[in-house]
Image (cartoon, rainbow, N blue to C red; front, side, top):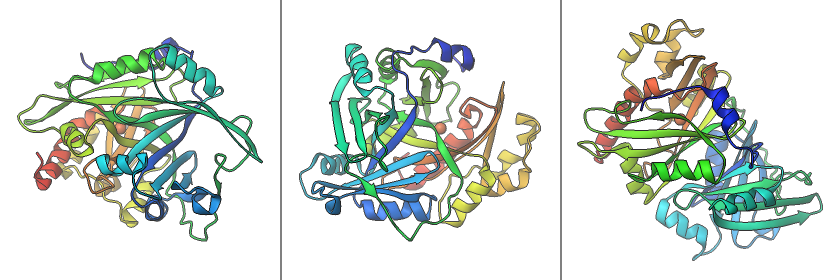
Amino acid sequence: MSSTIELPKLYEQAADFMPLLGTDYIEIYVSNALQAAYFYKAALGFSSFAYSGLSTGNTEKESYVVIQDKIRIVLTSPLKSGTAIGKHIDKHGDGVKTVALWVDDATKSYEEAMKRGGRSFMEPTVLEDASGKVVQSGIYTYGETVHMFIERKAYSGVFLPGFEKWESHFNPPSVGLKYVDHMVGNVELGAMNTWVKFYEEVMGFTQIISFDDKDISTEYTALMSKVMSNGNGRIKFPINEPADGKKKSQIEEYLDFYEGPGVQHIAVATDNIIETVTELTNRGIQFLRVPTTYYDTLTDRVGEIDEDIEPLKELGILVDRDDEGYLLQIFTKPIEPRPTLFFEIIQRKGATSFGQGNFKALFEAIEREQALRGTL
Ligand code: FE2
């Protein structure tokens, strides 16, 4: 099967038993939340938003919440040994624990998911403080990753009960990141269709795109990918599994180092990728590079685009086109010691796809990095 894109019709087919309003937050378990928050602010352009820890009466864990436009990232570390968070970090390294979804009714979302075979992470729980109440519930997805359902219509506080506003004099300017475009999960060989079924049956998502190993492969390795979307198209979760190759694929490398399935990358959108990537580069973020020959035939492949080719080439930004328009994208190197989680920066100019035309060039770039790490 090769890629097919007919989004509006497919979005309508997605079941609406679980209406999702958007991504509420992403929680990453890290070994040092204080220092991670500094990286997210200084290098990635986030601002201080909310805090929970010893000074708010939380003796178990410390969380810093950073924000950039609609993107909220919660960075959490344990305050003592032997905790579930500490074990998660020991096994996986720093990694995404929670992809929280904003819903109108967290109790109904949980019941619908459980009725359809979801695995419980947290029964509906009411959290209250002087600013009102939040209802939250959660189910497991692949590996130890969870989806929380967050109902906040009766809450006017800064983030969640238990958090206070994080006041800091250090808030470097935004780099122009706007919202989460999609989040990709890596699962084990043979498990992709299980998780496609999970998103279809338990969450009411629809598969909108698929690539197989003929679409995305190099001489050595390959991957297969299917993209799942919710009914209104705001939440998109591509799922990758490794395909057989002569050498270890980047997905296998991830699974080895993460010690199981998990979130591979978070794609965040900007309205001006040249400005955003220039600023991120100035702040020390390192991106994957494709050979400059990629740009020699760019216009032949994607047609006329608004941007000059020269800055794209200088920064290493990739371009791809589908029936509806084009997109610009670039991938950071992993942002922790293990070659696991990374970010994608994406600007959509009409295109609703995921840059499959770039996968081969990228795949080769990732393999060069793997070879340098000695893990190919
Ligand atoms: Fe992506």
